[in-house]
Image 1: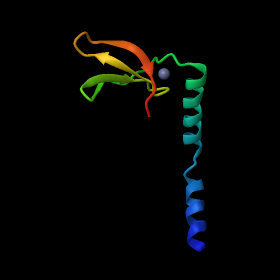
Image 2: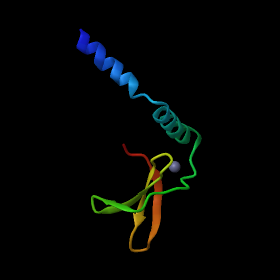
Image 3: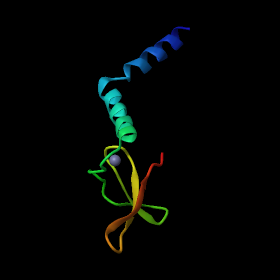
Image 4: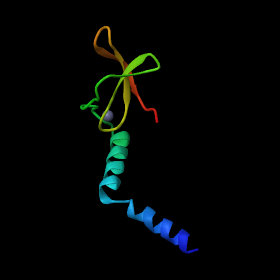
Length: 77
Ligand SMILES: [Zn+2]
């Protein structure tokens, strides 16, 4: 019983303000739309290249040969 109480208390301690605001901002970007202004560097996955929005996490395919993005943004967890 004492151990369960200690674990629950430590979990609450991890809910610091910055992470709550970060999750909230991510949700706001998804609900109200995002300009995808800041994108990560291209990264490859399963033989294809992608770039990821640093604000909302949306991904878009990146054509390495043409060095430009193509297709539409999509979300993948
Ligand atoms: Zn975005």
